[in-house]
Image 1: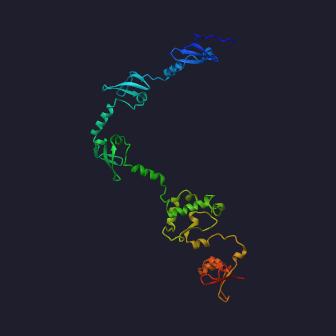
Image 2: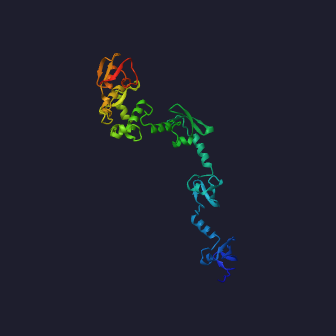
Image 3: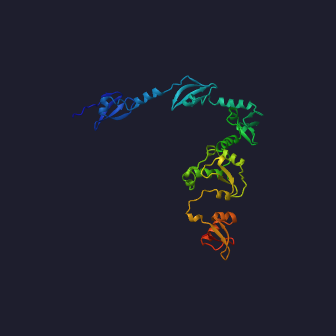
Length: 342
């Protein structure tokens, strides 16, 4: 195809100057800049400038002319570029201010307003006045603030404006107290009783707990009154025999009916011995329930009991000790000899 010579031809703000090969032309824009444009973009009108036309249109669309407008004590005189406006203050000073600060009211003067505000503030005697938990004692000129005493006893210097606006109401103790009130629900997290409560919840509600199969796994639950309310459980415990100072094993929670869950009408505080006697009967072979006999050194029967547990309860000797003798693991326990009854 024969090349069309576009040299000197105008396309919008562009004038074609020289063919660069590959269908591209070196063009000069009316703004003085040069740019390389594809011939098809020139003929279709897709490109009509070096980019300055688009920038001008964008600037015209977004430009907010503030000339002559008042912002507090400032009057905008002219745009300086970069978002800054030359402004004249009522006091006569001329300053350069960013447009966004004029719009949002952050800057209302050359600085004289703030100086006057501070001076006026010094004249506002706050001595003896109360601001939340703070009471103003005396003015501190070098810090432009007031020495205040908090209700907790601390003394602190607080900026005068901060006091006036109500942004400071204490030495910091109010915020700390508020934070503690949020994170503290019942105040018993680190107590012995909370450990009992947590264990009870874990056994019945957490399938990953190693004892879950004996409790939650077989339908043992916690009543709604206690499940999410440790305070309610604590109140019941203190009113029904719980002793926080009891030796270990002397005050344990026990379910009266082992097939029912944890609730006020099915729980009590007992020692370990009573609790062990109230456990579910384990599934054992019939031989596990054979009667046992206490004998002397010659093999004469001194006493006979229906089971090892009964023998332990009657004599006060541990069931494991009696079992050890009966099964040949030891010869005596606490000076006594035992055997399984035939």
